[in-house]
Amino acid sequence: MDRIDREILALLQLEGRISFTELAGRVQLSLSSCQRRVRDLEARGIIRSYRAVVDAASAGFGFEVVAFATLTRPDVLDEFDAAISHVPEIIEAQRLFGEPDYMIRIVAADREAYQKLYDKVLSRLPGVQSLNSTIVMKEVIASRALPVVRRSIE
Image (cartoon, rainbow, N blue to C red):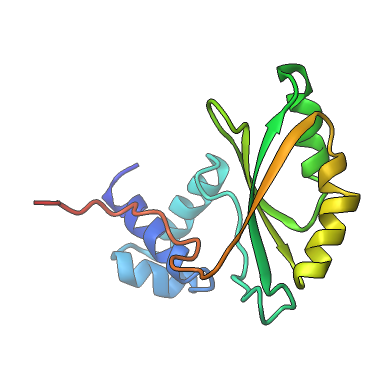
């Protein structure tokens, strides 16, 4: 990836609906060269998808939890991964080194909706030894663009 690819990525992360014409102008490429570079970034899996960023509270998900899951044994990892992928309220999950085994971001309409989800779904996930939840008080930094354009830090 060169400087122009990084500029393209930076712009697309901030303005996913930018036209190819506008994008080409901003990175100083011909339209066809710009389209070719974007298609190549997509084909290589560097650009994985495009989507709208939705305000959770406005969409009815005003309650967010970060949960930490510890599993009973390593042989249930794949089963656990598959199970959490089918829970739409889980909006992000990472497998961690050490303990706990997972960090999971979960959204719900409110505390009662989260409690039902916890009781009926989360606590019954395969191999769960413990699930510790922390309520998110305030979103300080939302999921943001990767810093693909290099800057010098002095």
